[in-house]
Image (cartoon, rainbow, N blue to C red; front, side):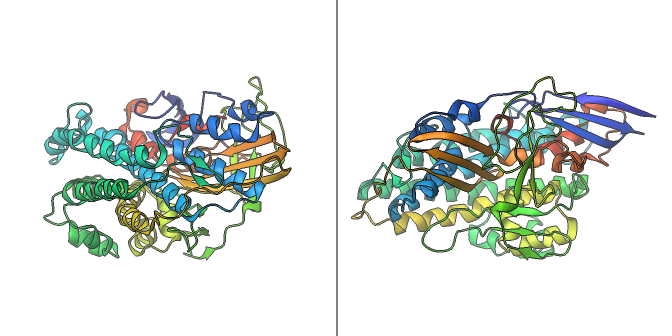
Length: 481
């Protein structure tokens, strides 16, 4: 017998989220994911001065504020033909990486792992240790992680003046130049972050962690090791999390942390079944509103408008349905690492596909890579050179700003008439992963990932649903335009 249940609102999720599930014999047969909050940032931006975007878009979200700033800066830079100062690019990369790494820590320690401390797992041999370590509010892990996260975000004070919602990021670079003493502080903060990762997260040097090049090597490395990463791997193995949330959609990345050289993470699209990588084409992105509470508009983000229609009969979410070459795509740390050719993540995808385990492993693997990259960028700053180049204002034009937030690919599309914003469109990472069905009835990534999830008699209380949802690390306030 098929029955429908609604799961939500979810705790430990930024913003509001509901999931409607059709169950058959205790297994999910279909899912509809709803973003029930409308915010209207794209409408707020219409008609405002172009530079107002740098004040408004960071306020879309309080935990990925820099990512929104970076996308707006890139869009304005493209529209105005501005060439940024090299120091400004490096400083922006540092601030952006610090925010993304802090998001990864928050997700793992405060959003994802506390679910395994629930009483539902009380009979598992690892439960006492996991509960003592990760139980919400009471666990010892947060007591170690929160000071480390706060220390990491001191980078914002040095390079951006404050966090969140900094105005330091501009098309021509950054407004906060630093001196030699501040660079020493910057390197000290990055060193403390690396120390936390090596002592607490991994229980090993980052060089050794990044040398792991296969699932077999990861399993050998994990045996007998302490650290929170190894604790997660033990839980994931016991619960077979590699079987949860599995999908085989294209993986997409816009490329991350750009500069004069190649970006730290390459742009591209990866077919997880064939492992074939192709180039990324921004023109292949469309937005479908067939099942969104939005009036019909152009499929192209550069030509589309965001106009709500709360009474639309076919709608069930304020989230549009982004599509790449007409189909859904998965974004996030897994996509970034796989597309960039990380051998461990490529082997995880080949062995298990895109699943709960692989998404979390990729996210933690990325923190190690970011720690090393941040140290290199800080050393590359030339303190005798400017951090900001001035650019022209008041030009007609269009621009696309494509960056990688912690949760995946973030794009801003802008059309300017002189110094005024005529049109602004935002496609956030959670818009990709939590999209509703499109006009062809094709479900979004999470809707597909939930199919086949066993919930048994627990129904809406099933913790397995939580694991799948949280493996994507949703940020719903960015999703709802």
